[in-house]
Amino acid sequence: MKLAPLTQRFVMHFGEMGSRWGINRTVGQIYALLYVSPQALNADEIGEALAFSRSNVSMGLKELQSWNLVRLIHRPNDRREYFQSPEDVWAIFRTLANERRKREVDPTLSMLREALMEQPLTAQDIHAQERMRQMHSFIELMTTWLDDVQKMDSDTLASLMQMGSKVQKLLEMKERMKNVFTPARSTQQGDGHGQS
Image 1: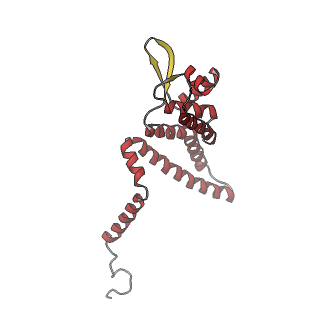
Image 2 (image 1 turned 180 degrees about the vertical axis):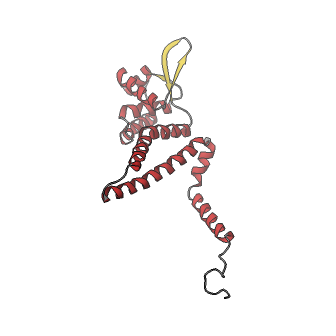
């Protein structure tokens, strides 16, 4: 199986970018190939297309399966295993966000929770713990937001992303409306101009 020029360029680029995202080049190229392939591929087809050894393909597929980024498919009367990337890019985004959270965010939150339960004994630790409290609050806010995003269907999520700066304008309008409808303090309460 020979890769068409456009496909080859995409696969090579994804391999290079993979190392920046914390995955090795081989895994990045395998994933890119599966993503653009019109049908599921078996390990031999992947190895042939990318000129990878069977063991490299096997290790790469195991890594992708551990991230839930590929599906295993069986075909009738064929003992080989075929692999396919999810079609929906939003499903891929949700999967990546969920897996990164389990591997990176949750352990950090656990460490921060433990640190916040300790009684600091020095001025340096008191300062450090306050900074950790701020980080904990921020990460919890972000994970709550990600949980909400995970529950959205793909169309709603796309609409939200397309809103961009319109969300900020909406929040500004909400603040202005709140100021309009919030009753002003009585002039008789402590402004010095009420009747005595």
